[in-house]
Image 1 (cartoon, rainbow, N blue to C red):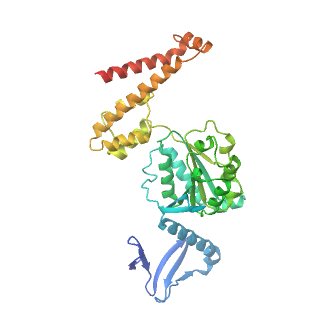
Image 2 (tube, rainbow, N blue to C red):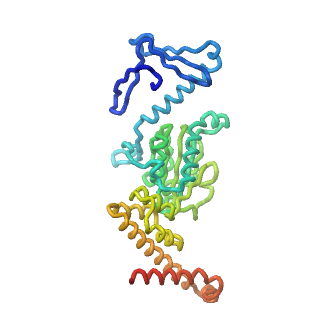
Length: 382
């Protein structure tokens, strides 16, 4: 359009859409693989266009060019599509489990997600590579799908990252609530109702697997993750979240069932600076060195906790940072107290071992903990 002498623009069905229409005898030049191609409209009443290619280029570029147009068209249509969130529900009058959907309007994006920049870029590159790999997967005889495990403490941004991925891919989200399923058949039935180009999400999978009497069997969940059932569609991304991978059968998250493992830690100083930039508009502050020092001695809060403090005090950035500092001090004091109380709770030989090491080389860390606790008490009393 920028290279044309003139063009006709019309509003589309939506307020944000603009349609470009070629007038009679107007020509648009395109370039592909070093060849020039010409699109023209010789009849304004017709909805078809004429493509002209030099005879010497026709055999070489016609098929690849049309495939390229189809790919670009699919990408544009995917981005125009309204992203929706599907949840499985069951009512007293409708026993068969069905999906219900609502527009997904979560504002999270890859740019607003607070996580290590290098890791974020790796995930984005992995997703972009996945989108372009249909022929590669088929050549290997594999289903065109990708799976991620997001694990870490609560409040570290796992759910927000899922929302950002959905916005990045323009994929619908199917959130499987395993607690609303009576048996493995429910899981299979719901999976068969999902569409291509979608996110398949199961949150808190570890909590469900560690439950005393889960309704779904271990083989049922395993087959859902990488069995024949998981192959009923293509161009899907499966995401599972957990607080911890400990106390789980390692086969549930082995290679083949989960392709990529991503750890979401508690907030560090780098994450704090990102939160301060997003929430308070601060790139630097005189209190930043004090915050960094507290992080270095082991204090930790989740990004959600720090973010909420900043939102509540957004009218005063200095007050927000001071409140974060106080919260970090309380967290550190609680952590020190737990470690000190735990070190003396042994019985018999265990208790002797603890006492014998009290003043030895292995007591360097406990002594530091005493100093940290003393420093916190002194600060709070002053």
